[in-house]
Length: 164
Image (cartoon, rainbow, N blue to C red; front, side, top):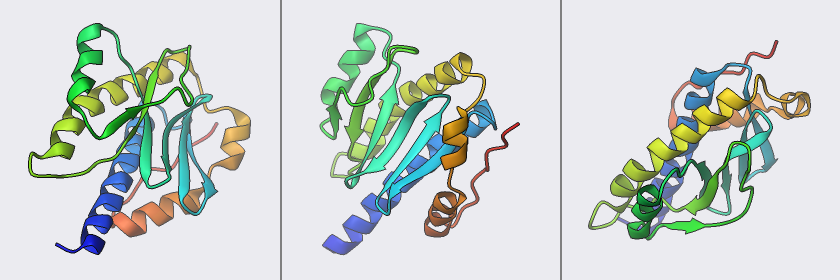
């Protein structure tokens, strides 16, 4: 596999994670989320009043719900996760980090994502319970073009928000 192939696979995996977050948000409330474009290499997924996923700088940032020490410790073995205080929220409380979904000899992405995904999905559910809808300013900055770009790259169909 060439370096270009690895880069392409890595970028695809980041987009797949972003698409997963979109689908989860949509299931939790069609009027609670929106995707925005910061620049051509930086997309954000906003739910309620919070950024919950961000594709930037060649990696993906995620908010997760850590409720106990065991869950916190489970991240200890994830070498492709970097904790950051960026957008760490109080209500609902979150821990945040950058994830680099690399697949290696030991199935790094597969193992890491099996730990990260349920905690990210649980955070999305907490946000959906906290907020009744996506704030108006974020509704106005939603970009269907971002969704189309992801759809074309992954050859999938993504949901669209439906604001009331």
